[in-house]
Image 1 (cartoon, rainbow, N blue to C red):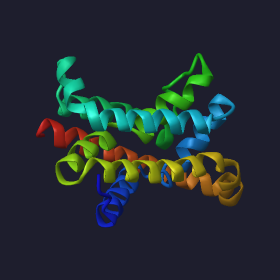
Image 2: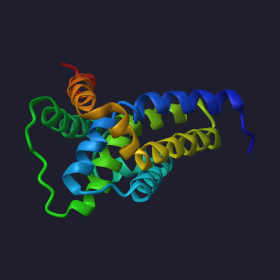
Image 3: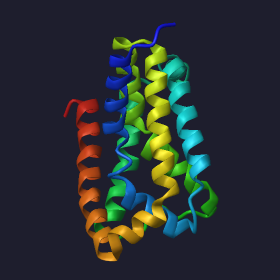
Length: 188
């Protein structure tokens, strides 16, 4: 097992761009507001576990349940689309009966470890050594944990109007990501 700094940097940067936890700050704050709190440790550990599991078993797991990567990505695009609609239009689509689950769905999956992240992991696996991808996952998830742990500070830093602007802007970006995921995987 040989670690390659170039591969680690590449996988870390690609995953950082796909996970986009900085862009998701308004979503995280909104989820915390709805649920009362976010369990940073649980969300980070579940997302990390999902990514590692998918790295090793992703294609096989999807085949066992009769799914292809494209179908998985399309399903993820719908969840992202509805979250974005909530942000842009101020709607409430996801009504959590059990607020403690918000740290898992939709935070850990599909916001952090979503269809885009999972399909990216499958792509990275074709180009880079697994141990280097694992290091990239861990580095990203440490940063995600730091951001989740500090959402109160970030909320104070941005202020109410700043967060509202970020939420609407990121909502439009999420809509675009959802549509791109949908188009890329349906051929439309």
